[in-house]
Image 1 (cartoon, rainbow, N blue to C red):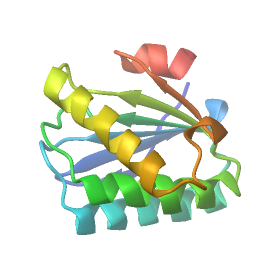
Image 2: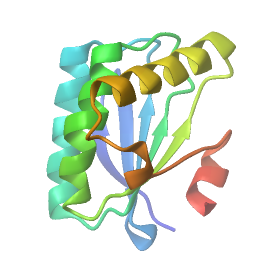
Image 3: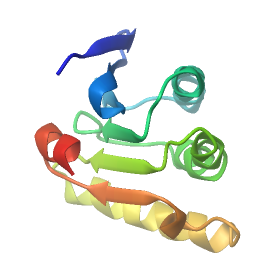
Length: 137
């Protein structure tokens, strides 16, 4: 299984596994600003539009805090756009942090309440503890 580097900087490493059509985004920082987040996902979106990506693994284990407005933009705008290009499966790896997990849950509830047309069920979203599990499932 070969891995191709797509983006690499102080905030993130993004790799692509062409044989499995998987894009892996590993955040290296405890927090990413909304501007940096939007720029990163816009850049990944350009890659997705030109390459065959069916699954994205979002490894957030290094994060401690996230920006709620980034999460909202990611779900409401980015995901529906990427679905047009074949990306519909998302695997998330969260930090081992109950407060972070609770924040994610509350954030998703807020998005669902404020955006009734957006349905989380329209996407294959699953949570795993390891990269290996995320790749296999």
